[in-house]
Length: 205
Image 1 (tube, rainbow, N blue to C red):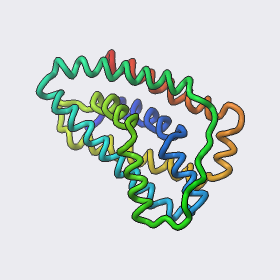
Image 2 (image 1 turned 60 degrees about the vertical axis):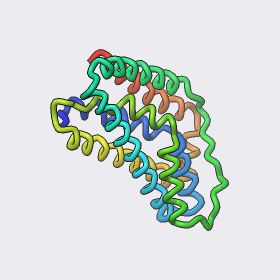
Image 3 (image 1 turned 180 degrees about the horizontal axis):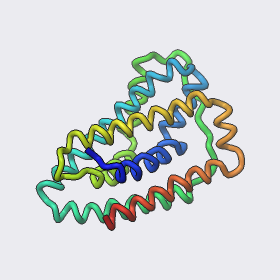
């Protein structure tokens, strides 16, 4: 089982990364305003399962490297930390505008909404890169991997769902808030700073 220090770093970092405007959050807001919250839940379920798929695949792939090639994993740990610092720096400098697309069809079916969310999650290359860089270093190979992975993936799924609900229910009010002043810029800077700190922590830990 993960210790509290690990969770204290992982939970806020992933939450702030999740809540920043991106593909899935934009989709949740757009659908929330166009087809309603209840129907948007189908997309959210697909997206959450897609994120879980990416997370599990990333950890299983890198865990095999941990066990069989410890020297290579040490290199990947430094590389992953450097990549997180790079991502955090880019988030810090990210554009401040937030303009969701409004081209959602009103009559889209539940299956289409589910698949739209799932495909959006697994087709996002940044999501794969982030999971590969961030998740494996939080896994202690001296302990059972499955329980640790279950906890981390559970946190990820809950965080993603909460953030999408915020965007979907916030609708136009949240959109106006994000477009006002420097709100998006500061949100990106908080997430970017956390990610850069985690990158340094992972590389030096």
